[in-house]
Image (cartoon, rainbow, N blue to C red):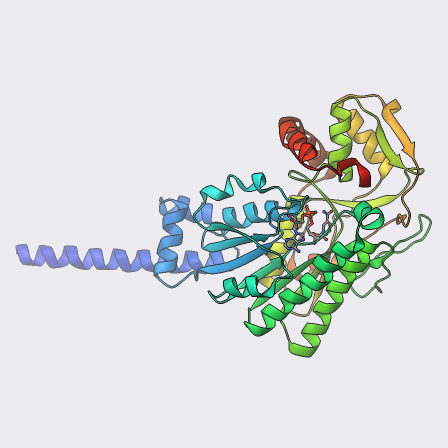
Length: 397
Ligand code: NAD
């Protein structure tokens, strides 16, 4: 009798554990199909996210992946690293950055607490250094590393831009080719397409010609063309993205929105180039990270994707919005001579990523600008520190 009870109990346990295993397999499948988030799985199973990851990995449902994020100490790179570490606990992220004036390793202090995060100082044009990492086996490279300040490319050393944006990208492509790295995403800009006149009814599509007008855009275009060539010649699995102007936390204060915010906070004038009617298409950085995430997992090698939030604003409009939110008078707007080669308007068409990958921006400008202003108000020391450490800060704005 007792023996029978035991066997019934054992049978029940066996059935329950097999039901649980099936449930786990189904949840893992839904997770990999992006139909459910890890947070939800953790709630359903009543265990921590890390434990979910551990179980998925142990059962061979979730493969550990190693990703190099180059330029991860910069603005978008650091936001992207936080996005990946939060969303994919089975990803190891190596932040590979040479730490130029634009980098701020302080941005990653929180990430450093995560065992899946590692920083390696290095130049993307240094093949030997990159090889040391590639030998360990790399699944993905996302390349944010670049010289990015248009003003510095106009008034400073364009050679630095060629080094990072062209030679650096080429070096990474060689690495991807030689080490058969399965995925490479090249982060680029809408500035490669050149300019649109204010009265022109035109947009930039993925197949629009490259017509860069400043050394920064020309160097980015050079890197992007190299990606195209490496895909066509060697079938290197590269995807290129062209995103519009980003704003959000961790952006260097030499860039327009943080520069205006910081000056408005300090009751200083806001220097607006020329007549201030130049138009840029603005996207919140988190929306950009989400788009890269989708492209990385579901984009097609060899393809190009435009990313923009359909949010065109003139510089003068941006200045007024920031002054209004901070509560300063519009009389702080100060027109200064225009920058040579300053493009009049960018307008990016993002239908392809929306239609093919189901992306759409989650943030409106009206919500995300006050959020961004708040971040800078709470991080005044962060801005001050950057300005103190950058001797050339005001020369190129
Ligand atoms: P950023 O200037 O804030 O950061 C660039 C980072 O790259 C820095 O940490 C720097 O140290 C690093 N870096 C530069 N040269 C390097 C090299 N040779 N080797 C290793 N690291 C190097 O730039 P961001 O605004 O974060 O932009 C990131 C990428 O996104 C760039 O490729 C840029 O062209 C592209 N992009 C930016 C925007 C924008 O509005 N910021 C819009 C579209 C595309």
